[in-house]
Image (cartoon, rainbow, N blue to C red; front, side, top):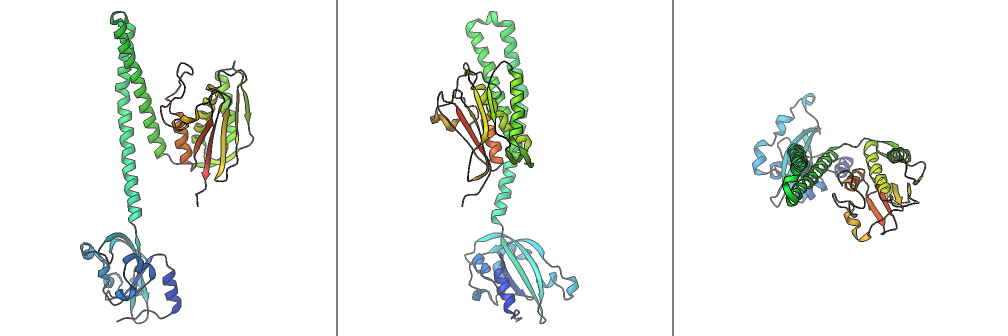
Length: 362
């Protein structure tokens, strides 16, 4: 039987390889394995040496197992190096696993050794399956949300016409039913808008670039003030606040947080809104938006970042948009590898924090 190279350096290199290594002679008998192969297949190396390599291949896959002689002809110039194969492995306990195998030829002078680098790719395949399932689900959600928008618009429109043109003959109870139809249709529209937005964000690719968050905040503040020029609010914006972020998505975060601060300070004569940074050992950047508005009950902090959750009555602070602003903030921040949270008290204002590029916990 062909013996492996006796060079101690070769043996040391084989042990240093992160993959399982199985070296066979041209007749398919194992002549050398490393410790990783022992762990992967569950055999002691003494049990493998001299055995045919097919013992490491499931019965169902043996017909597809390549012939080493066929793959590595006598002429070295025609030997494919590093050939990658998608096969399966069989452990000592008869369990099997999907494997990625790279083959290389080693010319020992006495003959050819075929070195197989074997990697268990179960986790990679599971990840790909999850990604495919997630993509399919996102496409389905987007398609259904898109297709339902037209009938909902019609339902809301016809209900509005019913109220306007026939309200007098419907009576109080009939008008109440029609108004409920309009309200529920609008709620459904908001839900579909949110689902489409979630689908879009989940498929979005981040385009990270250098962004001055304070400059973005200042531009948003100018736009807000132009909408209500009669309001007097004291703004404090820390300069500068550099970060690595997707400029379009991070602007959405700042818009939602600053719009909320503007809305919930509307009853304050001395309203103030502040944007700045706070120290945080776990992230590259930690920002906050603070206001002295109505605040919120800390017991309901967990609801703030859920879609369609409102902690204040619409009659007190008229709702704008879909009611999903903070839910979108959380999703965008998490796409950037960060997190978001809030602190506040009833009548004592609120502070919303978000981080970017959090470090992995050790």
